[in-house]
Length: 108
Image (cartoon, rainbow, N blue to C red; front, side, top):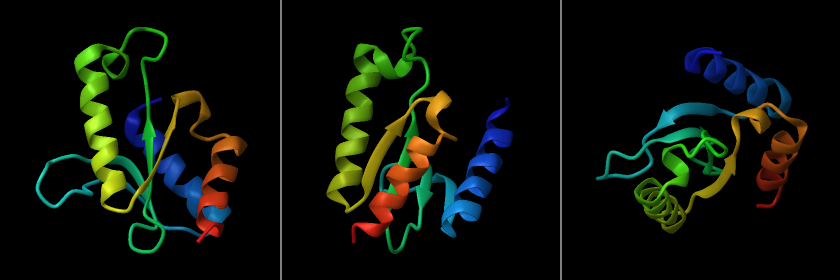
């Protein structure tokens, strides 16, 4: 599935099931060019969803430099008040992910 197709499906999935705003490629940092794969309710809930591909193929996210860069990005997002969840591509559209996001929205 192409990234744009997946993005559209996920944003629709979130809107229909949670009534939440879901933005793709959300630039969360005022200076760095970091972008979150998705940001749900960026003003009120500030939930970032990162899709971690390549977990089983030694992709960028699981090798040294990429792993360290991701930690810096996620830690900075947390420092700025975002809650970061990480999912695999297979779990993106799952009930497990939907329920986790729902729980985070309701935890305020």
